[in-house]
Each structure stands twice: as C-alpha cells, then as structure tokens.
Length: 78
Image (cartoon, rainbow, N blue to C red; front, side):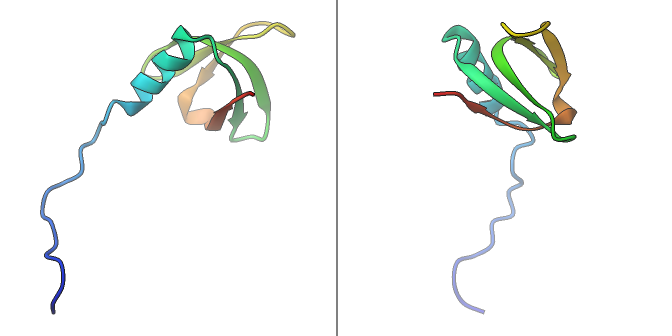
C-alpha cells in the first residue's frame, strides 16, 4: 500500500463551532427557520440556548423551547 499514511489521532468530540454560530445568531438577531425532524418548521430569532434546547422568539406565535435532538437543520432567513 502506498499513499498518505493513516492518521491515528481521533477527531475531537466537540469543536465548539455550534456555540460560536448560535452566539453569532443571537448577538446579530438574525432571523432563522428551524426545520424539525417531524417536518414542522418554525421561524424566529434565537434568544437563548444551552446543551439541550434553543429558545425561538416569534412574532406570529408563542415563543418556543425546541429540543436540539428534534432539530433536523436550521438556516438563516434573507
């Protein structure tokens, strides 16, 4: 076998990029759309997060705490 040797270092369990990104969204009050694993979509501003939930503040409905394990993905709204 030739080529690049295989690295034996393990990838870090946490890069803290999620924390940086969520802080960026909160500090800049960037509107997001959160798509949940069940197909529902929620739009609003992220106001708070911890290791398990994010809080989305909405103008068109009550504020919501969403469990991170229920989030499929989120994206910034234009």
